[in-house]
Amino acid sequence: MTVVAVLADPPRPGLAVPDLAATTPLSAAEAAELYAATLKDTFRAVERSGGDLLVNYRPDERLPDEHVTDTPSAAELRALAVEALDDVDDIRFEPQVGSTPSARAGNTATHLLREEGVDSVAVTRGTAPLLARKTIDSAAMKLRANGTVLGPATRGRSYYAGFAGPVDFEDALGDAELETLVDRANDAGHDVEFLPLRATVETGAELRHLLPVLWGRIEAERVVPEHAATVVHDLGLRVRDGAVVADGAGDDR
Image (cartoon, rainbow, N blue to C red):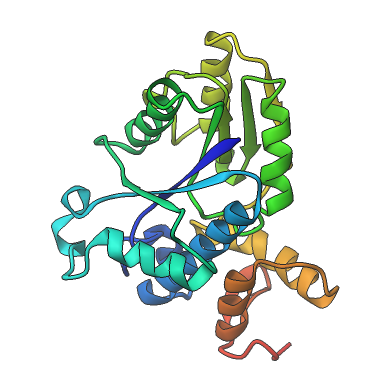
Protein backbone atom coordinates (compact mmCIF):
# COMPACT_ATOMS: atom_id res chain seq x y z
CA MET A 1 0.00 0.00 0.00
CA THR A 2 1.35 3.43 -0.95
CA VAL A 3 1.48 6.24 1.58
CA VAL A 4 0.54 9.42 -0.28
CA ALA A 5 1.97 12.51 1.40
CA VAL A 6 0.19 15.73 0.45
CA LEU A 7 2.65 18.59 0.99
CA ALA A 8 0.31 21.30 2.23
CA ASP A 9 0.49 24.91 3.33
CA PRO A 10 -2.40 26.49 5.24
CA PRO A 11 -4.56 28.24 2.60
CA ARG A 12 -3.80 31.80 3.69
CA PRO A 13 -3.96 34.77 1.29
CA GLY A 14 -0.53 35.69 0.05
CA LEU A 15 1.00 32.41 1.21
CA ALA A 16 -1.01 29.97 -0.91
CA VAL A 17 -0.17 29.98 -4.66
CA PRO A 18 0.96 33.65 -4.74
CA ASP A 19 1.89 33.43 -8.44
CA LEU A 20 -1.73 32.59 -9.25
CA ALA A 21 -2.97 35.81 -7.71
CA ALA A 22 -0.18 37.77 -9.40
CA THR A 23 -0.97 36.46 -12.90
CA THR A 24 -4.80 36.27 -12.96
CA PRO A 25 -7.77 38.47 -12.01
CA LEU A 26 -8.00 36.47 -8.76
CA SER A 27 -7.35 38.28 -5.51
CA ALA A 28 -4.99 36.73 -2.98
CA ALA A 29 -8.03 35.57 -1.00
CA GLU A 30 -9.67 33.99 -4.07
CA ALA A 31 -6.41 32.23 -5.03
CA ALA A 32 -6.19 30.85 -1.50
CA GLU A 33 -9.83 29.71 -1.76
CA LEU A 34 -9.06 27.81 -4.97
CA TYR A 35 -5.95 26.29 -3.36
CA ALA A 36 -8.02 25.12 -0.40
CA ALA A 37 -10.48 23.52 -2.82
CA THR A 38 -7.77 21.64 -4.72
CA LEU A 39 -6.35 20.41 -1.42
CA LYS A 40 -9.75 19.09 -0.39
CA ASP A 41 -10.18 17.32 -3.73
CA THR A 42 -6.73 15.77 -3.32
CA PHE A 43 -7.50 14.61 0.22
CA ARG A 44 -10.70 13.00 -1.02
CA ALA A 45 -9.05 11.31 -4.01
CA VAL A 46 -6.33 9.78 -1.83
CA GLU A 47 -8.75 8.75 0.91
CA ARG A 48 -10.98 6.96 -1.61
CA SER A 49 -8.03 5.20 -3.24
CA GLY A 50 -6.14 2.19 -1.96
CA GLY A 51 -3.44 4.46 -0.56
CA ASP A 52 -2.95 5.91 2.91
CA LEU A 53 -3.34 9.68 3.24
CA LEU A 54 -0.68 11.66 5.06
CA VAL A 55 -1.27 15.41 5.34
CA ASN A 56 2.31 16.67 5.54
CA TYR A 57 1.90 20.29 6.59
CA ARG A 58 4.32 23.19 6.88
CA PRO A 59 4.24 24.14 10.57
CA ASP A 60 3.94 27.73 11.75
CA GLU A 61 7.60 28.00 12.72
CA ARG A 62 8.52 27.39 9.08
CA LEU A 63 6.12 30.01 7.71
CA PRO A 64 7.04 33.65 7.03
CA ASP A 65 6.13 35.78 10.04
CA GLU A 66 3.52 37.75 8.09
CA HIS A 67 1.57 34.55 7.41
CA VAL A 68 1.44 33.23 10.97
CA THR A 69 -2.03 33.56 12.50
CA ASP A 70 -3.74 32.66 15.76
CA THR A 71 -4.92 29.40 14.16
CA PRO A 72 -2.14 26.78 13.99
CA SER A 73 -1.30 25.46 10.55
CA ALA A 74 -2.14 21.90 11.60
CA ALA A 75 -5.59 22.92 12.87
CA GLU A 76 -6.39 24.82 9.69
CA LEU A 77 -5.51 21.86 7.48
CA ARG A 78 -7.33 19.42 9.72
CA ALA A 79 -10.45 21.57 9.35
CA LEU A 80 -10.11 21.31 5.55
CA ALA A 81 -9.86 17.54 5.82
CA VAL A 82 -12.98 17.45 8.00
CA GLU A 83 -14.85 19.36 5.29
CA ALA A 84 -13.62 17.01 2.56
CA LEU A 85 -13.79 13.59 4.21
CA ASP A 86 -16.38 11.54 6.05
CA ASP A 87 -13.92 10.52 8.77
CA VAL A 88 -10.48 11.86 9.62
CA ASP A 89 -9.73 9.60 12.59
CA ASP A 90 -7.31 7.45 10.58
CA ILE A 91 -5.70 10.32 8.64
CA ARG A 92 -2.14 11.17 9.59
CA PHE A 93 -1.15 14.82 10.09
CA GLU A 94 2.58 15.36 10.40
CA PRO A 95 4.80 18.46 10.17
CA GLN A 96 7.28 18.86 7.37
CA VAL A 97 10.98 18.89 8.25
CA GLY A 98 13.48 20.81 6.14
CA SER A 99 14.33 24.31 4.98
CA THR A 100 13.39 23.94 1.29
CA PRO A 101 10.57 22.20 -0.62
CA SER A 102 13.06 19.61 -1.92
CA ALA A 103 14.36 18.89 1.57
CA ARG A 104 10.87 18.65 3.02
CA ALA A 105 9.67 16.23 0.33
CA GLY A 106 12.86 14.19 0.54
CA ASN A 107 12.81 13.94 4.32
CA THR A 108 9.21 12.74 4.27
CA ALA A 109 9.75 10.12 1.57
CA THR A 110 13.03 8.86 3.02
CA HIS A 111 11.67 8.60 6.56
CA LEU A 112 8.65 6.60 5.43
CA LEU A 113 10.70 4.22 3.29
CA ARG A 114 13.66 3.71 5.62
CA GLU A 115 12.33 4.25 9.13
CA GLU A 116 8.75 3.05 8.78
CA GLY A 117 9.43 0.42 6.14
CA VAL A 118 6.47 1.25 3.91
CA ASP A 119 6.35 -0.50 0.54
CA SER A 120 6.08 2.73 -1.43
CA VAL A 121 5.55 6.44 -0.90
CA ALA A 122 4.30 9.26 -3.10
CA VAL A 123 4.45 13.01 -2.68
CA THR A 124 2.08 15.52 -4.22
CA ARG A 125 1.59 19.26 -3.72
CA GLY A 126 -2.20 18.96 -3.84
CA THR A 127 -2.50 21.51 -6.65
CA ALA A 128 -3.59 19.14 -9.43
CA PRO A 129 -7.38 18.93 -9.10
CA LEU A 130 -7.69 16.26 -11.80
CA LEU A 131 -5.57 13.84 -9.77
CA ALA A 132 -8.25 11.20 -9.27
CA ARG A 133 -8.61 8.00 -7.29
CA LYS A 134 -8.10 5.87 -10.39
CA THR A 135 -4.81 7.62 -11.16
CA ILE A 136 -3.55 7.05 -7.62
CA ASP A 137 -4.47 3.37 -7.77
CA SER A 138 -2.86 3.03 -11.21
CA ALA A 139 0.33 4.57 -9.84
CA ALA A 140 0.33 2.10 -6.95
CA MET A 141 0.11 -0.79 -9.40
CA LYS A 142 2.99 0.64 -11.44
CA LEU A 143 5.10 0.97 -8.28
CA ARG A 144 4.96 -2.80 -7.84
CA ALA A 145 7.14 -3.19 -10.93
CA ASN A 146 8.99 0.15 -11.06
CA GLY A 147 11.09 1.96 -8.50
CA THR A 148 9.76 5.37 -9.51
CA VAL A 149 6.44 6.53 -10.97
CA LEU A 150 6.03 10.18 -12.00
CA GLY A 151 3.02 12.22 -12.99
CA PRO A 152 4.16 14.99 -15.38
CA ALA A 153 2.65 18.41 -14.75
CA THR A 154 2.87 21.73 -16.53
CA ARG A 155 6.11 23.78 -16.31
CA GLY A 156 8.18 20.59 -16.37
CA ARG A 157 7.13 19.69 -12.86
CA SER A 158 5.38 16.70 -11.31
CA TYR A 159 1.97 16.46 -9.70
CA TYR A 160 2.74 12.97 -8.32
CA ALA A 161 6.11 11.44 -7.51
CA GLY A 162 6.05 7.87 -6.24
CA PHE A 163 8.97 5.77 -5.05
CA ALA A 164 9.52 2.19 -3.95
CA GLY A 165 12.98 3.10 -2.64
CA PRO A 166 14.84 6.27 -1.62
CA VAL A 167 16.29 8.72 -4.14
CA ASP A 168 18.39 11.85 -3.70
CA PHE A 169 15.99 14.81 -3.39
CA GLU A 170 18.61 17.55 -3.00
CA ASP A 171 17.47 20.51 -5.15
CA ALA A 172 15.20 18.11 -7.06
CA LEU A 173 12.02 20.19 -7.04
CA GLY A 174 11.62 23.30 -9.14
CA ASP A 175 13.02 24.04 -12.59
CA ALA A 176 13.37 20.93 -14.80
CA GLU A 177 11.87 18.96 -11.91
CA LEU A 178 10.63 15.99 -13.91
CA GLU A 179 13.96 15.54 -15.69
CA THR A 180 15.85 15.85 -12.41
CA LEU A 181 13.67 13.25 -10.69
CA VAL A 182 14.23 10.85 -13.58
CA ASP A 183 17.98 11.38 -13.30
CA ARG A 184 17.87 10.74 -9.55
CA ALA A 185 15.75 7.63 -10.08
CA ASN A 186 18.26 6.34 -12.64
CA ASP A 187 21.08 7.02 -10.19
CA ALA A 188 19.23 4.88 -7.62
CA GLY A 189 18.83 2.04 -10.13
CA HIS A 190 15.07 2.50 -10.51
CA ASP A 191 12.98 1.72 -13.54
CA VAL A 192 10.77 4.74 -14.25
CA GLU A 193 7.14 4.77 -15.35
CA PHE A 194 4.86 7.71 -16.07
CA LEU A 195 1.26 8.75 -15.47
CA PRO A 196 -0.83 10.94 -17.80
CA LEU A 197 -0.06 14.66 -17.92
CA ARG A 198 -2.18 16.75 -15.54
CA ALA A 199 -2.31 20.52 -15.11
CA THR A 200 -1.56 22.07 -11.76
CA VAL A 201 -3.00 25.44 -10.73
CA GLU A 202 -0.16 27.53 -9.36
CA THR A 203 0.11 30.18 -12.13
CA GLY A 204 -2.19 31.98 -14.55
CA ALA A 205 -0.82 29.98 -17.49
CA GLU A 206 -1.65 26.73 -15.70
CA LEU A 207 -5.14 27.91 -14.87
CA ARG A 208 -5.66 28.80 -18.56
CA HIS A 209 -4.71 25.21 -19.39
CA LEU A 210 -7.03 23.69 -16.79
CA LEU A 211 -10.21 25.74 -17.20
CA PRO A 212 -11.29 24.52 -20.68
CA VAL A 213 -10.66 20.93 -19.61
CA LEU A 214 -12.65 21.38 -16.42
CA TRP A 215 -15.57 23.18 -18.11
CA GLY A 216 -15.56 20.57 -20.87
CA ARG A 217 -15.95 17.82 -18.28
CA ILE A 218 -18.73 19.75 -16.54
CA GLU A 219 -20.64 20.28 -19.79
CA ALA A 220 -20.14 16.64 -20.82
CA GLU A 221 -21.47 15.57 -17.40
CA ARG A 222 -18.29 13.72 -16.55
CA VAL A 223 -16.75 13.35 -13.11
CA VAL A 224 -15.05 16.54 -11.91
CA PRO A 225 -13.20 17.53 -8.73
CA GLU A 226 -16.15 18.79 -6.71
CA HIS A 227 -14.51 21.47 -4.60
CA ALA A 228 -12.35 23.01 -7.32
CA ALA A 229 -15.24 22.94 -9.79
CA THR A 230 -17.48 24.72 -7.27
CA VAL A 231 -14.99 27.55 -6.77
CA VAL A 232 -14.42 27.86 -10.53
CA HIS A 233 -18.19 28.01 -11.09
CA ASP A 234 -18.89 30.47 -8.28
CA LEU A 235 -16.15 32.85 -9.46
CA GLY A 236 -17.16 32.41 -13.10
CA LEU A 237 -13.60 31.58 -14.14
CA ARG A 238 -13.25 31.00 -17.88
CA VAL A 239 -10.75 31.52 -20.66
CA ARG A 240 -11.69 34.29 -23.08
CA ASP A 241 -9.39 35.60 -25.83
CA GLY A 242 -6.48 33.70 -24.35
CA ALA A 243 -6.87 35.13 -20.85
CA VAL A 244 -8.50 34.04 -17.61
CA VAL A 245 -11.56 36.12 -16.78
CA ALA A 246 -13.70 36.09 -13.67
CA ASP A 247 -17.34 36.81 -14.56
CA GLY A 248 -18.55 36.20 -11.03
CA ALA A 249 -21.38 33.99 -12.31
CA GLY A 250 -20.68 30.50 -13.49
CA ASP A 251 -23.77 30.32 -15.70
CA ASP A 252 -22.68 33.24 -17.90
CA ARG A 253 -21.26 32.23 -21.27
